Image 1 (spheres, rainbow, N blue to C red):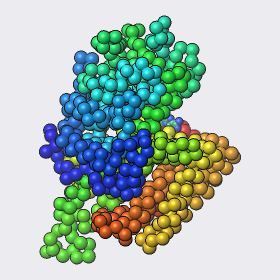
Image 2 (cartoon, protein in one colour):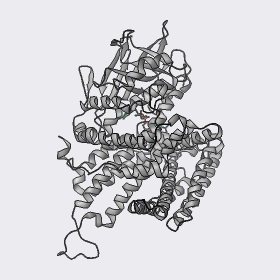
Image 3 (cartoon, rainbow, N blue to C red):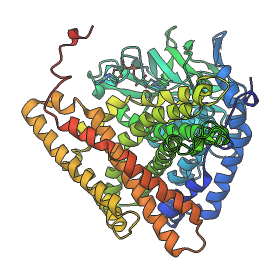
Image 4 (tube, rainbow, N blue to C red):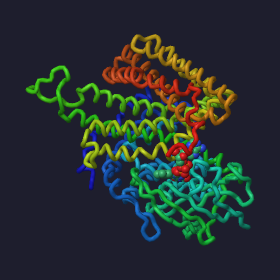
Length: 606
Ligand SMILES: Cc1cc2nc3c(=O)[nH]c(=O)nc-3n(C[C@H](O)[C@H](O)[C@H](O)COP(=O)(O)OP(=O)(O)OC[C@H]3O[C@@H](n4cnc5c(N)ncnc54)[C@H](O)[C@@H]3O)c2cc1C
């Protein structure tokens, strides 16, 4: 089975939109004015994105279907994956893509995260399973760079950057999924300073494979005698193969006990691993004992932006496939002229199909803007100081659970909508939409389920530093509302968003009262819905921001693509007419004092 036997789109993403967000909305090229990012000007960014685009088209997209049909298998103790993964890792290493964010001190390129995020969006839109080895290796190497002793930089980083070794994040255990405080893997200090590791990890992405010579696990475990809960979790580097002084590799007692057969995202191997089955697995401490979870948050926060981003990537590809089909499929006639002698029209002419296309497009493009905006805050935090640094940090912290979970949840609906456009064909394997639908389903689960991110947002982030993060976000949004009020195209939408923001603030105050009167369980019982509401308002803000630029470019920039700007205004109009009103139902439920779920007797559900 190759791609040729399946109906695909003509394209999987829109470069013009990526450029619009990068250069017109965020002015990402100006990041090069900061010393840390110097050298990454508009020309080098274009070169980088062109090479990513070419690689995505030549290596990733052509294997999209095949990787879904030939999933990884555990054979003779090793997980075997599609052979193209070897090329992908090799080329990612050769092109410096794995070290793109790393500091020059360790051989990296110090590229702004905003640009690398745009590249990652393109790669995952071509083939999500194809990007996971390099992405995880990048995150694991960043952890070693940030927190591990320098001697480990020398041992691991160059091999990982070159794509010769891969990295993982090994957190989850049979009894510790959402609740990482229950991790029970153990680590016992040895005389030479290493630790003997024992335990099981499940669902480990790229946990084992025949792609590279070594797998470097960044693993959470409890040093014997450590306190219970998250305060007793440490992080270790645990390589699959131990590295001798002469560079040769020997077995480190990490056993692949199984590979999961997943509903989608099948090209990537997810492993069940046993560490220390023969009492001979060694690990090396990262940073200090008992601080492991705080270190892991660096990788988890980066991964969370990637999850939301890649949900948008997959939805982008599904959208373009359904757009192509909607232009080709003839069915029915204009509802006002039903005469049977008239020819049938392409389904894109039906209002409901237009609605489904606009739903996908506004979600995808709004989400790309959200993820790039978050990466931009990360870059600005890096190069700022004092209060300004705190401001970017808090904006990023507040938006991270939203940027992870809202696009992930919406991607399920968006890819489902793509199937709907294909009608009966969408339900078959001869059309790509069903694969995208299966592929994206993981995103509301890994890197923390949506429920956990709702709890993080309402339980921690909105109250962080006495609400300072929310205050900073409101300031950002109000700037764009004020501009949008100056233009006929957007002034009504600006007022709608302003009203909803006030309602959100009233709601947050109301919920604080609930916390005081009824306790934390009632306060947090609908945190997932609060996150959804927050997500709608954030996307509304970003559509208004994009519309402001489109208004400005349409009026003042002769070189601007006027049709493109018109489409941006159309999308903004759609979002405010169709999506923002959905906030009303959420506000009603969230303000209700009827505690359906909290007061429910669990035994009543049969
Ligand atoms: C394809 C895939 C790749 C993965 N990759 C990795 C990886 O590379 N490394 C790694 O360490 N892990 C990985 N995971 C594991 C993943 O992070 C966990 O599956 C996830 O965190 C959920 O944990 P769980 O499966 O134990 O579900 P559970 O924690 O048992 O959750 C089950 C349900 O209960 C809900 N729930 C649980 N607790 C609460 C609560 N307190 N309040 C409200 N609702 C709650 C959840 O929201 C969910 O709906 C991967 C998983 C998959 C499927």
